[in-house]
Length: 457
Image (cartoon, rainbow, N blue to C red; front, top):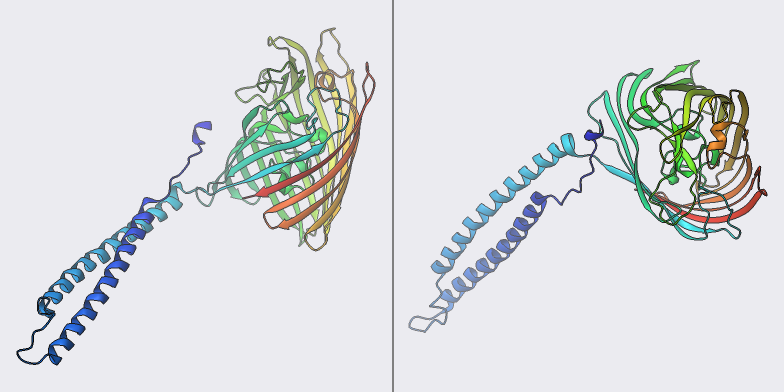
Protein backbone atom coordinates (compact mmCIF):
# COMPACT_ATOMS: atom_id res chain seq x y z
CA UNK A 1 0.00 0.00 0.00
CA UNK A 2 2.86 2.35 0.68
CA UNK A 3 3.77 2.15 -3.00
CA UNK A 4 0.51 3.97 -3.76
CA UNK A 5 1.81 7.07 -1.99
CA UNK A 6 4.11 9.55 -3.69
CA UNK A 7 4.80 13.25 -3.51
CA UNK A 8 5.35 14.97 -6.89
CA UNK A 9 6.55 18.49 -7.56
CA UNK A 10 4.40 19.54 -10.54
CA UNK A 11 5.79 22.10 -12.98
CA UNK A 12 3.71 24.93 -14.40
CA UNK A 13 1.26 23.94 -17.20
CA UNK A 14 3.06 24.45 -20.57
CA UNK A 15 -0.31 24.79 -22.31
CA UNK A 16 -1.09 27.92 -20.30
CA UNK A 17 2.29 29.45 -21.18
CA UNK A 18 1.73 28.70 -24.89
CA UNK A 19 -1.73 30.29 -24.82
CA UNK A 20 -0.40 33.44 -23.16
CA UNK A 21 2.38 33.75 -25.77
CA UNK A 22 -0.03 33.42 -28.68
CA UNK A 23 -2.46 35.92 -27.17
CA UNK A 24 0.40 38.41 -26.89
CA UNK A 25 1.23 37.91 -30.57
CA UNK A 26 -2.45 38.41 -31.46
CA UNK A 27 -2.49 41.73 -29.64
CA UNK A 28 0.65 42.88 -31.48
CA UNK A 29 -0.83 41.85 -34.84
CA UNK A 30 -4.06 43.74 -34.14
CA UNK A 31 -2.02 46.87 -33.37
CA UNK A 32 -0.14 46.49 -36.69
CA UNK A 33 -3.43 46.08 -38.59
CA UNK A 34 -4.80 49.26 -37.02
CA UNK A 35 -1.64 51.14 -38.03
CA UNK A 36 -1.86 49.83 -41.62
CA UNK A 37 -5.53 50.75 -41.88
CA UNK A 38 -4.72 54.29 -40.75
CA UNK A 39 -1.96 54.44 -43.40
CA UNK A 40 -4.40 53.41 -46.17
CA UNK A 41 -6.78 56.17 -45.15
CA UNK A 42 -3.94 58.70 -45.17
CA UNK A 43 -2.81 57.64 -48.68
CA UNK A 44 -6.34 57.76 -50.09
CA UNK A 45 -6.85 61.29 -48.73
CA UNK A 46 -3.48 62.36 -50.15
CA UNK A 47 -4.35 61.05 -53.63
CA UNK A 48 -7.57 63.05 -53.64
CA UNK A 49 -5.89 66.35 -52.72
CA UNK A 50 -2.89 66.10 -55.08
CA UNK A 51 -3.18 68.19 -58.29
CA UNK A 52 -2.50 66.63 -61.74
CA UNK A 53 1.18 66.82 -62.59
CA UNK A 54 2.11 67.55 -58.99
CA UNK A 55 4.64 65.21 -57.50
CA UNK A 56 3.23 62.93 -54.85
CA UNK A 57 5.68 62.32 -52.00
CA UNK A 58 3.94 59.04 -51.15
CA UNK A 59 3.92 57.69 -54.67
CA UNK A 60 6.43 55.03 -53.75
CA UNK A 61 3.96 53.57 -51.21
CA UNK A 62 0.61 53.00 -52.93
CA UNK A 63 -2.67 51.95 -51.31
CA UNK A 64 -2.43 48.71 -53.26
CA UNK A 65 0.94 47.87 -51.68
CA UNK A 66 -0.38 48.63 -48.23
CA UNK A 67 -3.49 46.58 -48.93
CA UNK A 68 -1.30 43.60 -49.83
CA UNK A 69 0.54 43.95 -46.51
CA UNK A 70 -2.77 44.19 -44.72
CA UNK A 71 -4.08 41.05 -46.42
CA UNK A 72 -0.96 39.12 -45.46
CA UNK A 73 -1.27 40.34 -41.88
CA UNK A 74 -4.91 39.25 -41.74
CA UNK A 75 -3.94 35.75 -42.91
CA UNK A 76 -1.29 35.60 -40.20
CA UNK A 77 -3.86 36.78 -37.68
CA UNK A 78 -6.28 34.06 -38.73
CA UNK A 79 -3.59 31.40 -38.23
CA UNK A 80 -2.77 32.79 -34.80
CA UNK A 81 -6.43 32.75 -33.82
CA UNK A 82 -6.70 29.10 -34.81
CA UNK A 83 -3.52 28.29 -32.88
CA UNK A 84 -4.84 30.02 -29.79
CA UNK A 85 -8.11 28.11 -30.01
CA UNK A 86 -6.29 24.79 -30.41
CA UNK A 87 -3.88 25.39 -27.53
CA UNK A 88 -6.61 26.72 -25.25
CA UNK A 89 -8.80 23.72 -26.04
CA UNK A 90 -5.91 21.32 -25.44
CA UNK A 91 -5.04 23.02 -22.15
CA UNK A 92 -8.66 22.84 -21.01
CA UNK A 93 -8.85 19.14 -21.88
CA UNK A 94 -5.57 18.47 -20.06
CA UNK A 95 -6.69 20.48 -17.02
CA UNK A 96 -9.92 18.52 -16.88
CA UNK A 97 -8.02 15.27 -17.30
CA UNK A 98 -5.54 16.17 -14.54
CA UNK A 99 -8.26 17.20 -12.09
CA UNK A 100 -10.17 13.99 -12.71
CA UNK A 101 -7.20 11.60 -12.63
CA UNK A 102 -3.98 13.18 -11.34
CA UNK A 103 -4.94 16.41 -9.65
CA UNK A 104 -4.75 16.06 -5.85
CA UNK A 105 -4.95 19.29 -3.82
CA UNK A 106 -2.09 19.71 -1.37
CA UNK A 107 -2.92 21.15 2.04
CA UNK A 108 -0.93 21.43 5.20
CA UNK A 109 0.20 23.27 8.29
CA UNK A 110 3.28 25.17 9.47
CA UNK A 111 4.18 25.78 13.11
CA UNK A 112 7.08 27.83 14.46
CA UNK A 113 7.65 29.84 17.60
CA UNK A 114 9.79 30.86 20.55
CA UNK A 115 10.08 29.22 23.95
CA UNK A 116 11.63 30.28 27.24
CA UNK A 117 12.59 27.58 29.75
CA UNK A 118 14.60 29.13 32.61
CA UNK A 119 15.36 25.83 34.40
CA UNK A 120 15.49 22.95 31.90
CA UNK A 121 14.61 19.58 33.46
CA UNK A 122 17.25 16.89 33.61
CA UNK A 123 15.00 14.29 32.03
CA UNK A 124 15.34 12.15 28.90
CA UNK A 125 12.98 12.54 25.96
CA UNK A 126 11.52 15.82 27.23
CA UNK A 127 10.04 17.76 24.32
CA UNK A 128 10.69 21.51 24.08
CA UNK A 129 13.34 21.40 26.82
CA UNK A 130 15.40 24.28 25.40
CA UNK A 131 14.95 28.05 25.17
CA UNK A 132 15.05 29.85 21.83
CA UNK A 133 13.30 29.93 18.48
CA UNK A 134 11.81 26.62 17.45
CA UNK A 135 10.65 25.09 14.19
CA UNK A 136 7.85 22.80 15.32
CA UNK A 137 6.80 21.08 12.10
CA UNK A 138 5.66 21.30 8.49
CA UNK A 139 2.77 18.96 7.81
CA UNK A 140 1.32 18.03 4.41
CA UNK A 141 -1.88 16.11 3.86
CA UNK A 142 -3.63 14.81 0.75
CA UNK A 143 -7.15 13.51 0.36
CA UNK A 144 -7.54 12.01 -3.14
CA UNK A 145 -11.08 11.15 -4.11
CA UNK A 146 -11.44 8.05 -6.28
CA UNK A 147 -15.20 8.24 -6.54
CA UNK A 148 -18.33 8.22 -4.44
CA UNK A 149 -17.17 5.41 -2.15
CA UNK A 150 -13.38 4.92 -2.35
CA UNK A 151 -11.42 7.48 -0.29
CA UNK A 152 -7.87 8.05 0.91
CA UNK A 153 -6.02 10.16 3.48
CA UNK A 154 -2.26 10.69 3.42
CA UNK A 155 -0.24 12.82 5.85
CA UNK A 156 3.50 13.52 5.65
CA UNK A 157 5.12 15.35 8.56
CA UNK A 158 8.55 17.05 8.74
CA UNK A 159 9.93 18.15 12.09
CA UNK A 160 13.13 18.74 14.04
CA UNK A 161 13.98 16.70 17.11
CA UNK A 162 15.32 18.16 20.35
CA UNK A 163 18.78 17.32 19.04
CA UNK A 164 18.26 19.41 15.88
CA UNK A 165 17.87 16.47 13.51
CA UNK A 166 15.31 16.79 10.70
CA UNK A 167 13.01 13.77 10.63
CA UNK A 168 10.07 12.83 8.45
CA UNK A 169 7.24 10.41 8.97
CA UNK A 170 4.22 9.14 7.07
CA UNK A 171 1.85 9.87 9.94
CA UNK A 172 -1.32 8.64 8.25
CA UNK A 173 -1.88 6.53 5.17
CA UNK A 174 -5.44 5.26 4.94
CA UNK A 175 -7.53 3.80 2.15
CA UNK A 176 -11.24 3.73 2.93
CA UNK A 177 -14.45 2.42 1.44
CA UNK A 178 -17.81 3.92 2.34
CA UNK A 179 -20.86 1.68 2.19
CA UNK A 180 -23.09 4.18 3.99
CA UNK A 181 -22.97 6.50 7.01
CA UNK A 182 -23.02 3.55 9.35
CA UNK A 183 -20.33 1.39 7.73
CA UNK A 184 -16.93 2.78 6.67
CA UNK A 185 -13.88 0.51 6.36
CA UNK A 186 -10.36 1.97 6.59
CA UNK A 187 -7.04 0.17 6.16
CA UNK A 188 -3.49 1.43 6.65
CA UNK A 189 -1.89 3.61 9.28
CA UNK A 190 -4.39 5.66 11.27
CA UNK A 191 -4.69 7.47 14.57
CA UNK A 192 -5.71 4.92 17.18
CA UNK A 193 -9.36 5.68 18.01
CA UNK A 194 -9.49 6.59 21.67
CA UNK A 195 -10.67 9.73 23.42
CA UNK A 196 -11.54 12.91 21.55
CA UNK A 197 -8.12 14.53 21.13
CA UNK A 198 -6.37 11.70 19.29
CA UNK A 199 -9.40 11.25 17.04
CA UNK A 200 -10.14 14.89 16.17
CA UNK A 201 -6.72 16.60 16.28
CA UNK A 202 -3.86 15.42 14.13
CA UNK A 203 -0.39 16.81 13.38
CA UNK A 204 -1.46 20.29 12.32
CA UNK A 205 -1.16 22.53 15.40
CA UNK A 206 -3.58 25.06 13.86
CA UNK A 207 -6.63 22.84 14.30
CA UNK A 208 -6.26 22.55 18.10
CA UNK A 209 -6.79 25.43 20.49
CA UNK A 210 -3.57 25.02 22.47
CA UNK A 211 0.04 24.76 21.33
CA UNK A 212 0.56 21.14 22.34
CA UNK A 213 -1.47 18.07 23.18
CA UNK A 214 -1.77 16.91 26.80
CA UNK A 215 1.51 15.21 27.56
CA UNK A 216 0.40 11.64 28.19
CA UNK A 217 -1.57 11.57 24.89
CA UNK A 218 1.27 13.19 22.94
CA UNK A 219 2.58 11.33 19.90
CA UNK A 220 4.94 8.43 20.58
CA UNK A 221 8.12 10.32 19.62
CA UNK A 222 7.11 13.33 21.73
CA UNK A 223 6.71 11.66 25.10
CA UNK A 224 3.28 10.07 24.87
CA UNK A 225 2.57 6.90 26.85
CA UNK A 226 -0.35 5.80 24.66
CA UNK A 227 -0.02 4.10 21.23
CA UNK A 228 -1.32 7.03 19.17
CA UNK A 229 -0.86 5.27 15.80
CA UNK A 230 -1.90 1.83 14.61
CA UNK A 231 -1.38 -0.11 11.38
CA UNK A 232 -4.36 -2.31 10.69
CA UNK A 233 -8.07 -2.09 9.85
CA UNK A 234 -10.65 0.23 11.35
CA UNK A 235 -14.42 0.35 10.97
CA UNK A 236 -16.32 3.51 11.84
CA UNK A 237 -19.81 4.88 11.45
CA UNK A 238 -22.45 7.27 12.71
CA UNK A 239 -26.23 7.35 12.87
CA UNK A 240 -28.87 9.96 13.73
CA UNK A 241 -31.22 9.08 16.58
CA UNK A 242 -33.99 10.90 18.44
CA UNK A 243 -34.12 13.66 15.84
CA UNK A 244 -30.98 15.68 16.44
CA UNK A 245 -28.79 13.28 18.44
CA UNK A 246 -25.95 11.21 16.99
CA UNK A 247 -24.35 7.86 17.85
CA UNK A 248 -20.80 7.21 16.59
CA UNK A 249 -18.35 4.35 16.87
CA UNK A 250 -14.80 3.35 15.83
CA UNK A 251 -13.38 -0.17 16.23
CA UNK A 252 -9.94 -1.37 15.13
CA UNK A 253 -7.57 -4.34 14.97
CA UNK A 254 -3.90 -4.03 14.09
CA UNK A 255 -0.28 -4.51 15.04
CA UNK A 256 0.53 -4.00 18.70
CA UNK A 257 3.28 -1.56 19.71
CA UNK A 258 6.70 -2.21 21.19
CA UNK A 259 9.12 -0.16 23.33
CA UNK A 260 12.60 0.45 21.91
CA UNK A 261 15.48 2.90 22.47
CA UNK A 262 14.63 6.24 20.82
CA UNK A 263 16.55 6.78 17.59
CA UNK A 264 16.41 10.04 15.66
CA UNK A 265 19.91 10.50 14.28
CA UNK A 266 21.26 11.76 17.60
CA UNK A 267 25.06 11.73 17.73
CA UNK A 268 25.58 14.13 20.61
CA UNK A 269 25.72 11.52 23.34
CA UNK A 270 22.38 12.67 24.81
CA UNK A 271 20.30 9.98 26.51
CA UNK A 272 16.96 9.87 24.73
CA UNK A 273 15.48 6.96 26.65
CA UNK A 274 12.84 4.55 25.34
CA UNK A 275 9.67 5.31 23.39
CA UNK A 276 6.75 3.49 21.82
CA UNK A 277 7.07 2.25 18.24
CA UNK A 278 4.02 1.17 16.24
CA UNK A 279 5.52 -1.85 14.39
CA UNK A 280 5.08 -0.60 10.81
CA UNK A 281 6.18 -3.81 9.05
CA UNK A 282 4.69 -6.50 11.27
CA UNK A 283 3.85 -7.31 14.86
CA UNK A 284 6.98 -8.27 16.79
CA UNK A 285 5.19 -10.63 19.18
CA UNK A 286 2.22 -11.72 17.08
CA UNK A 287 -0.31 -10.36 19.57
CA UNK A 288 -2.96 -8.28 17.81
CA UNK A 289 -4.04 -4.94 19.24
CA UNK A 290 -7.75 -4.22 19.37
CA UNK A 291 -10.06 -1.61 20.83
CA UNK A 292 -12.20 1.39 19.96
CA UNK A 293 -14.57 4.07 21.12
CA UNK A 294 -18.32 4.77 21.16
CA UNK A 295 -19.97 8.12 21.76
CA UNK A 296 -23.38 9.75 22.02
CA UNK A 297 -23.83 13.40 21.00
CA UNK A 298 -26.76 15.33 22.43
CA UNK A 299 -28.23 17.89 20.03
CA UNK A 300 -24.84 18.78 18.46
CA UNK A 301 -23.71 20.21 21.80
CA UNK A 302 -22.50 17.63 24.31
CA UNK A 303 -20.70 14.38 23.48
CA UNK A 304 -20.14 11.62 26.02
CA UNK A 305 -18.17 8.50 25.20
CA UNK A 306 -16.22 5.47 26.36
CA UNK A 307 -13.01 3.98 25.00
CA UNK A 308 -10.65 1.06 25.55
CA UNK A 309 -7.83 -0.99 24.05
CA UNK A 310 -5.72 -4.05 24.76
CA UNK A 311 -2.41 -5.34 23.40
CA UNK A 312 0.82 -7.02 24.51
CA UNK A 313 3.81 -4.66 24.47
CA UNK A 314 7.38 -5.95 24.67
CA UNK A 315 10.45 -3.87 25.61
CA UNK A 316 13.77 -4.32 23.77
CA UNK A 317 17.29 -3.06 24.33
CA UNK A 318 19.64 -1.68 21.68
CA UNK A 319 20.61 -5.22 20.63
CA UNK A 320 16.98 -6.23 20.08
CA UNK A 321 16.96 -8.40 23.18
CA UNK A 322 13.55 -8.60 24.85
CA UNK A 323 13.66 -7.27 28.41
CA UNK A 324 10.04 -7.56 29.51
CA UNK A 325 6.51 -8.04 28.25
CA UNK A 326 3.29 -6.37 29.47
CA UNK A 327 -0.38 -6.83 28.66
CA UNK A 328 -1.60 -3.23 28.28
CA UNK A 329 -5.28 -2.85 29.24
CA UNK A 330 -7.04 0.50 29.19
CA UNK A 331 -10.64 1.54 29.78
CA UNK A 332 -11.93 5.08 30.20
CA UNK A 333 -14.31 7.82 29.24
CA UNK A 334 -14.28 11.22 27.54
CA UNK A 335 -16.51 14.20 26.87
CA UNK A 336 -16.70 17.17 24.49
CA UNK A 337 -18.82 20.30 25.09
CA UNK A 338 -19.39 22.81 22.28
CA UNK A 339 -21.97 25.37 23.38
CA UNK A 340 -22.13 28.85 21.85
CA UNK A 341 -18.56 30.18 22.29
CA UNK A 342 -17.63 27.67 25.00
CA UNK A 343 -15.57 24.56 24.36
CA UNK A 344 -14.43 21.98 26.88
CA UNK A 345 -12.79 18.61 26.39
CA UNK A 346 -11.83 16.02 28.99
CA UNK A 347 -10.53 12.44 28.98
CA UNK A 348 -9.95 9.75 31.61
CA UNK A 349 -7.79 6.63 31.24
CA UNK A 350 -7.68 3.71 33.68
CA UNK A 351 -4.85 1.19 33.23
CA UNK A 352 -4.79 -2.34 34.56
CA UNK A 353 -1.59 -3.80 33.15
CA UNK A 354 -0.43 -7.38 33.62
CA UNK A 355 3.23 -8.42 33.69
CA UNK A 356 3.81 -11.24 31.21
CA UNK A 357 7.59 -11.44 31.46
CA UNK A 358 10.25 -9.47 33.30
CA UNK A 359 13.92 -9.52 34.13
CA UNK A 360 13.10 -10.88 37.58
CA UNK A 361 10.30 -13.14 36.43
CA UNK A 362 7.65 -10.78 37.82
CA UNK A 363 4.02 -11.57 37.23
CA UNK A 364 1.52 -9.14 38.69
CA UNK A 365 -1.17 -6.56 37.97
CA UNK A 366 -0.56 -2.80 38.21
CA UNK A 367 -3.16 -0.03 38.38
CA UNK A 368 -2.54 3.47 37.06
CA UNK A 369 -4.63 6.36 35.75
CA UNK A 370 -4.33 9.62 33.81
CA UNK A 371 -6.74 12.44 32.98
CA UNK A 372 -6.97 15.98 31.67
CA UNK A 373 -9.61 18.67 31.19
CA UNK A 374 -9.41 21.81 29.06
CA UNK A 375 -11.86 24.70 28.79
CA UNK A 376 -11.88 27.73 26.47
CA UNK A 377 -14.10 30.65 25.46
CA UNK A 378 -13.92 32.56 22.17
CA UNK A 379 -14.60 36.30 21.95
CA UNK A 380 -15.76 37.54 18.55
CA UNK A 381 -14.25 34.52 16.73
CA UNK A 382 -10.81 36.05 17.33
CA UNK A 383 -9.62 35.80 20.94
CA UNK A 384 -9.70 32.47 22.77
CA UNK A 385 -8.30 32.20 26.31
CA UNK A 386 -7.96 28.63 27.55
CA UNK A 387 -6.86 26.63 30.58
CA UNK A 388 -5.97 22.97 31.05
CA UNK A 389 -5.01 20.71 33.92
CA UNK A 390 -3.33 17.32 33.48
CA UNK A 391 -2.48 14.61 35.96
CA UNK A 392 -1.07 11.09 35.65
CA UNK A 393 -0.49 8.58 38.44
CA UNK A 394 1.66 5.92 36.76
CA UNK A 395 2.87 2.91 38.77
CA UNK A 396 6.65 2.76 38.47
CA UNK A 397 6.69 -0.94 39.34
CA UNK A 398 4.73 -1.48 36.10
CA UNK A 399 7.25 -2.59 33.46
CA UNK A 400 5.29 -0.75 30.76
CA UNK A 401 5.56 2.71 32.33
CA UNK A 402 8.96 2.10 33.95
CA UNK A 403 10.41 1.24 30.52
CA UNK A 404 9.19 4.46 28.88
CA UNK A 405 11.41 7.53 29.23
CA UNK A 406 8.34 9.71 29.90
CA UNK A 407 6.28 7.16 31.84
CA UNK A 408 6.46 9.14 35.07
CA UNK A 409 3.82 10.47 37.45
CA UNK A 410 3.29 14.19 36.85
CA UNK A 411 0.91 17.15 37.09
CA UNK A 412 0.73 20.12 34.71
CA UNK A 413 -1.25 23.36 34.62
CA UNK A 414 -1.58 25.30 31.35
CA UNK A 415 -2.83 28.84 30.64
CA UNK A 416 -2.97 30.28 27.14
CA UNK A 417 -4.44 32.75 24.70
CA UNK A 418 -5.12 32.10 21.02
CA UNK A 419 -5.39 35.04 18.60
CA UNK A 420 -6.92 34.22 15.19
CA UNK A 421 -5.74 37.35 13.39
CA UNK A 422 -6.29 35.71 10.00
CA UNK A 423 -8.59 32.97 8.77
CA UNK A 424 -5.52 30.91 7.94
CA UNK A 425 -3.19 31.88 10.80
CA UNK A 426 -3.26 31.99 14.60
CA UNK A 427 -0.81 33.26 17.20
CA UNK A 428 -0.78 31.41 20.53
CA UNK A 429 0.65 32.56 23.85
CA UNK A 430 1.04 29.87 26.49
CA UNK A 431 2.60 29.25 29.87
CA UNK A 432 2.66 26.03 31.86
CA UNK A 433 4.05 24.58 35.07
CA UNK A 434 5.03 20.90 35.41
CA UNK A 435 5.86 18.78 38.45
CA UNK A 436 7.33 15.34 37.75
CA UNK A 437 7.86 12.77 40.50
CA UNK A 438 11.07 10.79 40.57
CA UNK A 439 11.74 7.61 42.55
CA UNK A 440 15.53 7.61 42.92
CA UNK A 441 16.13 11.32 42.30
CA UNK A 442 14.72 14.70 43.36
CA UNK A 443 11.42 15.70 41.79
CA UNK A 444 11.59 17.92 38.71
CA UNK A 445 9.68 21.23 38.65
CA UNK A 446 9.89 23.57 35.68
CA UNK A 447 7.99 26.38 33.95
CA UNK A 448 7.72 27.22 30.26
CA UNK A 449 6.55 30.32 28.42
CA UNK A 450 5.97 30.04 24.70
CA UNK A 451 4.56 31.81 21.67
CA UNK A 452 3.78 29.94 18.47
CA UNK A 453 2.56 30.90 15.00
CA UNK A 454 0.34 28.27 13.39
CA UNK A 455 -0.59 28.56 9.71
CA UNK A 456 -2.71 26.40 7.44
CA UNK A 457 -2.62 26.29 3.63
